[in-house]
Structure formats: structure tokens, C-alpha cells
Length: 439
Image (cartoon, rainbow, N blue to C red; front, side, top):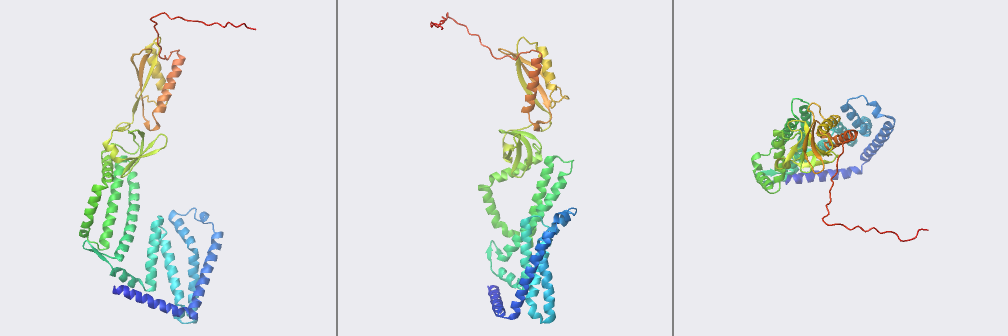
């Protein structure tokens, strides 16, 4: 609490001194010069941006240089403001006492710190992380320039509560939050880079590539959290209090999340399904687009994307059309009239199936007489395709159309059910005639 009182006293003294200085001519002069420099920076930057074609200028530059140049142009007004302030500050130093231009020096230092931090942090593509780094770094730099960094640090560290043997202060929370966000961002960037390298290894199957990528991300995030906790001085034994709460949360509300996570790891390890497989689970038929920690994305033929929990692939019946072999057999049932030659029908059916582009010729189609129906000879035609991801109903329809054309050409009838009605008693038929006289 003494540090808080000291900080409050310093701020009070600074405000009192500022109040006295506001009445002085030299402070008003410096404020006026700062306003003039800001106006010059805004006008000059607007004129330069109007004449500068940044896209054409940086068309052939590397991506990081283009991004750096965009941030330079965005802070162009501040850069011109700094240049004008430096000239004014040098002129004031030459004609008067250094104390008469102190405010100009402080404004120049603050603006310079902001531009440097903005340009360096501008290389970060994530906007949230960029703003976090820029604001945090400039706040620390501003407090250091004003001579308030140490008093503010002592004040934030002087107040705290003890939780589970660990003293928690506002300074500890700020440091932990900022460092945790930064390290998690670095871990995500590194894991994305390593995942792209893993996916480029053709010797690994898609499921193994996804599994290695997920493990790398998990290890990097865990490593980042441990580094932050050890850096800020948190004793891991003090976290035993929170482990019980996490266990209770897992027991009551997170069973499904943990189950889906474990199921996802099992699916990636046993390679029962992998990205690109054509599967049927429940009423959903499609191909596996991606596999996440909690769900698997299955894209259907109509373009809809189903996010199916990983647990369903472990507990439900799943049809994997391309599990061990990408060849899929399709069956087509049809019937012809009893007047047709069944041997000729079989030949025509095989020829019709072969005429469809997607039907494999390496595994030839064949046709069997299935049975003698009530009004037709029933046949079963079998053929194979290698691209079930392109659909199965459409190729079945193409084969049926080819059968229809072949039967039309050979005058083979496709019968429809017929019924004979036997009358047990005579039926009297009455025919009514029109008795009217026609004109």
C-alpha cells in the first residue's frame, strides 16, 4: 500500500506542477508548436498518399516488404510529425534554455517510440496480436519516457491475494496474460509452418499427416504455457488446487468433449477413416474433407458440409467405400420379357455397362440370371467404379439408360406386371342406347 500512496503522491505533484506550468508562456508555446507539427504531418501525408500508387510501386516486392511499406504509409503523418518536431526542438535548444523545450522532446520520444513499435509489430499478420504487441510495448515505452515505469510497477505489485499458496497481483496477471497470448500466437505460427512441411511429405498417409500435425500443435501449445508459467515465477505445485476443479469439470460437463478428442486420436492412429475417403455414416454420404480434434467434416454431393462428432465414428456403424481398395461394386437389377433370349440379354447388359466411361474395364462387369419372376426374367448386373467420390447414383443411372437403348435396339421388352381376372359366375352386361332422334 505504501507504493500506491507514493504513486498517488507523485501523480499529484506532477499534476500540480503541470497546472502551474500551464500558465507559463513557454509551455503554451510548446503546445502550439506540437499542434502546428501535427497539422503539417496530416496535410503532408494526405498529399503524398494522393500522389503515391502503392500497389504499382510494390508490385514486384516480397510480401513482407509490401506489408512493411503499407505500415510506413499508414504512419506517414506521424513520421512527418516527428521530423518537424526534431527541427523545432533543435531550434528551441539553440535559442533558449533546454527546460524551455522539454515538452517537445517528450512528444518526439513518444511519437518515435510509437512509429518504431508500429513498424516492427506490423510484420505480424494477425491483427489482434499486432494491436496487443503495439499497445503493450508503447505503454511500457511511454511510462519509461515519463519516468513512471518503476512507480507503476511497484504499485501493481504491492496489492495481491494469496490463492493456494500463490500470491496473485495485478502485475502478475498482466504479465501472464500478455506473455501467454504472445507465446500461444508463436506456437500457432510454428505449428502451422510445421504442419505444411508434414503435409508435403508424400511418404506419409493423410491420416498420419493429420495426426502428426495435431500432436505438434498440442506439444507446442503445452510447451508455450509451461514456459510462460515458469517465466512469471508460478510454482507448479500451487496449481494443485485448480487440478481438482478441472477434474470435476471433466466429470460433469466435458465428457463429450474429451470423448470426441480421444476418438479423433484413435481414428487418426488406426487409419479407419482419412481425408479423402468416401464414407456413409447414418444418413450422411460423402467424402471426408478434414479431421479436427472434436469433429470430422464430411461433404455431401449437394455441397453441404456435415460436422460429425468423432465419437459417432467409433460407436456407430460406418461404411468406408475406399478403406482398403478404391474400387466399388454397384449392383443394378432389371427384368425382361419371357420372349427374350436370356443369353443375349446377358451379353447386351455387359456391353451396355462397358459403354459407360466411369465403369472399369480392368475388372469387367458381369450379369447373372437372378430368377423367374411373375412377369419377367430377373437379372442382376454387377460393375465396378474407382471414383465413388463422384457419386454412385449418377453412374447407375447412366448404365440403366445404356440398357434401355440396347433393349430398344434389339426389340427386347421390359414387362410390367399383368393380372388375369377369373369370373366364377356369369356377368350380365347391359348396353344402354340413346333413344333420342338425331336432327
